[in-house]
Image 1 (cartoon, rainbow, N blue to C red):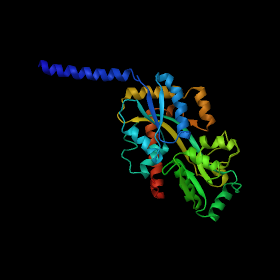
Image 2: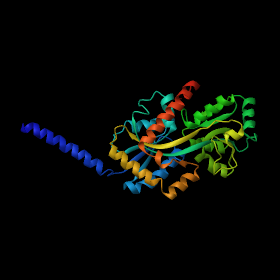
Image 3: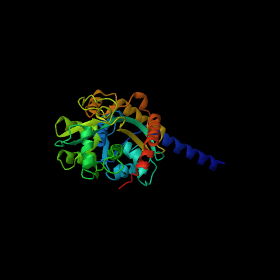
Image 4: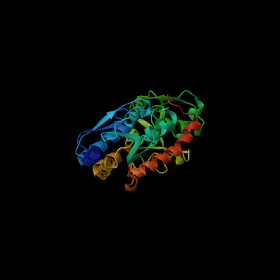
Length: 324
């Protein structure tokens, strides 16, 4: 009887220790994995968010760029990680939705992550090298049709939202062009500025600095309304391709089975950070739109991700998109 009681007491002690550890979380630096190259939109967003939540958490947030396979290598590192709150994924529609439809992943994009917080949306624009002759979007479509398979369109890899948007654009316009995969949006944009590729459908956070510098040409925003930071760029509706709306989004995920208390601590820090005027201004300057407060909860992110899977997977499979 005494032995049985001792076992029970020992188990209770271990349970109490686990609870206490969760309550004092975090006690050491946290690593946030980004699946794309440094300098790209996902990396930039992650660094801005990390900078503004470390004070709330009382620990440094280390950004780790694990590049490859449209961010699936980085996401996989987190999926296999310990559920202790010290390894997080700063993910996107590419890493936590699209990849699940085009790659044979060793993890499940829905089941192997714990949603923490939905951060911001990043609309896409259709852009081209500065010396592209087409004056507007329909002229660009006409040029692409007149030059099948000759144009080069940069993407941040198979399965990325850039790849998906380009594939949808190609299908809707009946054009043919070469998709050129890069290891991230940043190196693809560098080549567009240099005139090494012809066209991109890229995120506002990558496009706007180059557009304002006059280094590239913009034909349309893939949005319902004009962007505040690019008011002269027409929407796809105005430019002749109505309804061709595509945007990315960024969110924080932890490995599955991460304790609710740790998720709550992380979510509270992120939500507080998103109220910071400096953070909001910096994301706005990139063209990123912070989600409303009621959409920043773990439950809202779970529902959002599931809805995105239901929206995009049938389109991806119908288009025959595969990982490269």
